[in-house]
Image 1 (cartoon, one colour):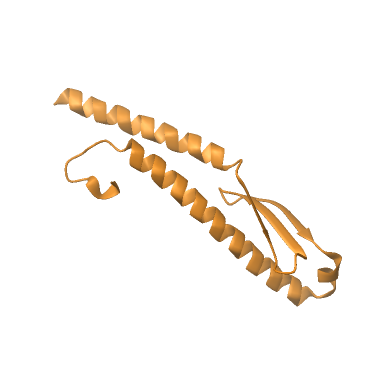
Image 2: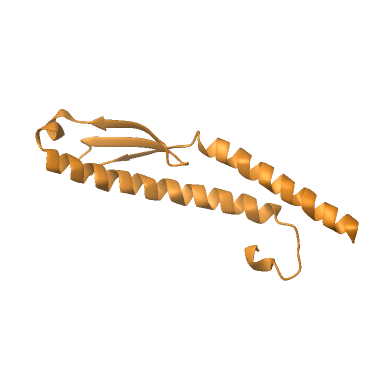
Length: 107
C-alpha cells in the first residue's frame, strides 16, 4: 500500500513537471489576430502575454474607433490563446493523473 502511495506521489510530481514544461513551451507559441480590415494587428503568446500591437496610422485619427478595434481584436486573440492554453494543459494533466479510485473525473 505504501508503495502504491509513493508511486502516485511520483506520478503527481511528474505531471506537475510536465505542466510546467508545457507552460514554458506555450510562452513561445504565438497567436496573431487582426481586425477585419487589417488596420490593427496583435500578437500574443498562448499564455496570453501581449507581444506586439501594430496600428495603422488611419486609426490614430479616430480614438473611439481605435478603442473598439483594440477591444474586439484583443478579445478574439485572447479567446484563441485561452483555447490553446486550456487544451494543452488539460491534455498534460489528464495524461499524468494517477489512477486513484473514485477520482476518474479527469479521464
